[in-house]
Amino acid sequence: MCKRVVGCFLVVGIATALLVGLLNQAPDPFKVNKTGYWGPARIKHVRAAPEDDPVIRKFSVHIPDEALADLKWRLAATKLAHPLQDSKFAYGFNALALKSVVDYWKDKFDWRAQEKRLNQFEHYRTVIEGIQVHFMYARAVPANAQTKVFTLVMTHGWPGSIVEFLKIVPMLTQTKDGVAFEVICPSIPGYGFSEAPHKQGFNLLETARVFVKLMDRLGRDKFYLQGGDWGAMVSRLIATYYPERVLGVHFNMIDVELGPLALLKLAVGSYFPSLLLGDKAPVKAFPFPFWPKFLHILQESGYMHLQATKPDTVGLALLNSPAGLAAYILEKFSTWTRAENRDLEDGGLTTKFSLDELLTNVMVYWATDSITSSMRYYKENIGSVVMAKNRRTPVMVPSGFAVFPEELIAFPEAVIGSMYTDVVTFTHHSKGGHFPAMEEPALLEKDLRSFVLAVEARNATQRSVPRPFPFVDLGPLAPKVMLTFGPETTPGAGAFARTRFEPQTVHKEPGKASQAAREANVPTEVPTPTKDAQSQPVKKTIAFGSWPFNAAPGFPEA
Image 1 (cartoon, rainbow, N blue to C red):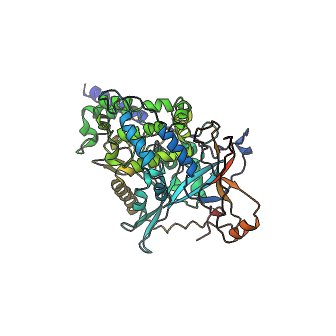
Image 2 (cartoon, rainbow, N blue to C red):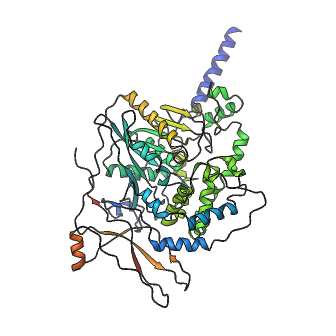
Image 3 (spheres, rainbow, N blue to C red):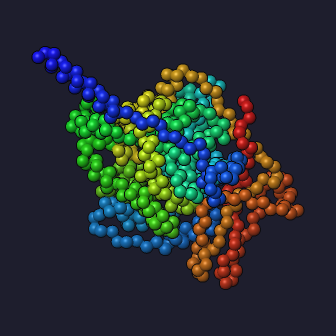
């Protein structure tokens, strides 16, 4: 009898071990394409793609006066629906609150001041896989020769942009605890100043490869990664498929595929949180209890279903209405910062943000006509067979997590262990939501630095200062960055037709007057756009940005 009982326990134990191992088994890594082509040329195979221009061009963010006049005209023509009584933000962005935003945008918002904020950092574009990829760059400020300087790649999400990082980047470039960062903030292709892909299929995997190619071109062999939202997913894939390049990856949103074992842990944790959390208090973002959190996610994910199926339909509407675009984007900054903001008349927008920084982010989408292409990113990723195959591929590099309570959803450390095999830091914060770099930059900076210090202390590595960007001035014939505009055909419309920001290199035969200016390396005067008496369409050429500093590819040996 005793032998039978022991035998039964042994069989049950072996079966349980096999079942747990099966549930926790990760798939083999998905094979990643080595290259692609997303430019406008029609090709039958990627091998026939035009060769990329490896030059890295510097520019300054500058929106022409005509585009700003067009914006004001559209804002003045805004139509608003009457909100339901006492509805606040429960039905979406309240029209009365939107009127206040539109009035401020039209009458008080100073875009030129915000341009200066953006241009305090360096901006560059370079062609990778047929499209222009933009990145913002901030140089490290070492305190002395002993300062360790690391390269940090920070990637934004939707509906954010590089504007998310304007507060935190200056903090990271300074030396603290002997560490400073040079920060590279690329714009995902289709967002902001990065060109939109011209072909279907540009997903997270393609983004990861393009960003690694960008780092190759900049001569950065190893680097840290940081991201939230789409930026977290891009960072995860870079860490997964290019681990030899990654020193560590830090997240402010947990990107994890929940396998059967993880779901089982969550089910048990819903009733017995201490089994997953130990003596730590549950974070509001955790799915405990499950049903209220499920309803919250359901309420906040309508945009996702729309953008993952028919992004161009809503994109056309938002492309033509700045007020509509502001409502669509800022509603996310309201409820994703704090769910209870739905119960406030103004959506709590200015509790954590100023209208200036919120509208600056909206302006990046508006001025570049990138809202439609940014929403297509959902269709390329959600429901994609290619993306589904890599969802549970584990991350082997050192990983750190900053968990903010007002995030849409987060998971306990015990749940993510099968996907992130080397968790170095996992911090519960008492405040903050989906946009911590804007909401709580000091908290995110501290968390990121703690992670890097922990990784470096463990590795006991000594790294040299990254080489500077040696952008070479190509001389007096350096091309000017231009933007083409044309007036609307409707007489009396008072607005200019919109053209997505895509700088083009314009070459002209220099005249005697402009030749002297070129020899002095100063920009020549651009002809003033004109319009004939009959208001017929006239082609215009308007200067965009500054003279670019063109660079040869690669960096000289140290």
